[in-house]
Length: 301
Image (cartoon, rainbow, N blue to C red):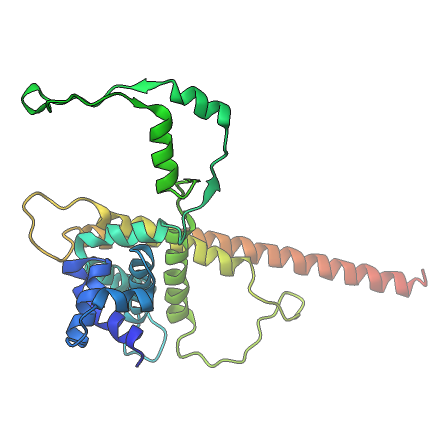
């Protein structure tokens, strides 16, 4: 096993107490390789500099392990509710740090920025603006009082710190949706395809081979919303004085899952009945068209 995978595997059990942080990876590395003196340098080499990339790698590994935790030892189809309950229980295992996992999912891999335009007139105007020094209590004032600072010097400090670029704050709203989509896709696979003999071709009303229909996407979108709505109960702040690592809102989240799944199945059943009705209409239209075709031919028209 590669060192990267070893570090991630050793870091996963530390999540309930150390969260999705770079230091968690460093601690996992030290437990694997005590002889390594510069653990930060190794983490930089394997996962990248800063805190975003290492934390995101840890979140991704946690997601992959969560997908594996959804399956049981059964070799046949599994109950949809049981599969999702196992996944929510897995999420509850990281305790209050689940919020940080969501924060990492919404954090973009890089911060976009735009070049700071050079406007000499603006800089000249700012140089005439004097900003008074910050307040200092009389007892702490130095013997030589600080002089006012020009606004242009503050602008210079900001541009030098940002590399003469203006950073733009942004979030990735698709992160949690992609996270829930993968869970929904895995749950539906375990519920519909596990143990099923592959090779059958899905066909339409006229026996033509078809790919995934609208219901394939509808199921996954609906189940993604069901899962996010249910797991959101785990994101509530912990009660004051709580010392448990297991999320105290697990029972509430599982109860919400039962309720949301019932609504999901009810809506899905209504859609399936609508599809059957559409199929009956299509068959009727086909029957009428064939009848008219036969009638026209019999009349030599």
